[in-house]
Amino acid sequence: MDRSQLILIGLPIFLFCSDLFSLFTPPPPKPPSHRPNQPPHIPHQQRPPVVVPGTLDFPSQLSPLLQKPSGLGAVGYGNTVEINFCVSCSFKGTAVTMKKMLETAFPGLDVVLANYPPPAPKRLLAKVVPVAQMGVIGMIVAGDRIFPMIGIAHPPAWFNSLRANRFGSMASTWLIGNFLQSYLQSSGAFEVLCNGQLVFSKLKEGRFPGEIELRDLISKTLTKPSIVTGSY
Image (tube, rainbow, N blue to C red; front, side, top):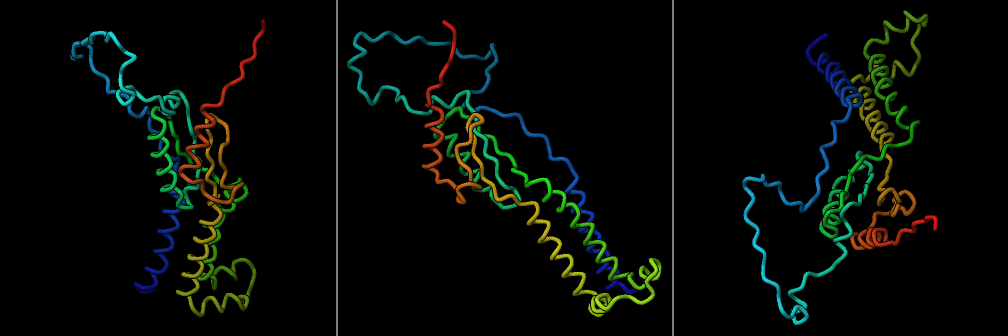
């Protein structure tokens, strides 16, 4: 076996092992969530002295421009928005843009990004595809010795056609397998939940939400009055 054949055989095996390693490696732990716009902690010894301003005699005469505006940002504290999106579909850029927009519109809002996995049957088939890839490639390389071992004296016609162009057959097998694996790992989802309540679903709507649309949906959910039942 010359050097070119070793490269053609070793490259698919190396790529397959890297795919298996990335497939079964557990995801890294999530970093601890932090509140945006939260002032840094200052030790007790280094805190500056607090200056108490004098009381104005006529607070009603203050200009409205100097008063602190009361916007919707105050309702962000203590609330969580989850954006579950398809990582393999390259939706991460849209999710990060929405995250920055919501954190700016609602200071203190905790926005969490997470992967939305595909259904269990698709995940199972995605793990079977690399095994089938290596089986076909191994059959192309050493099929003339494998068939007699399983009791087939004369290889079938499709094997001879694959052996006629080994490089093209292995390259086609690898490309088709990667395409199938990418398709099976994709969910096409972009789901937005506010405090556990679904406010937008790409799987239902068939489109992405607009920034103004998503901001209005989150605002309506955060400002919705909660009904508290109790005994009198």
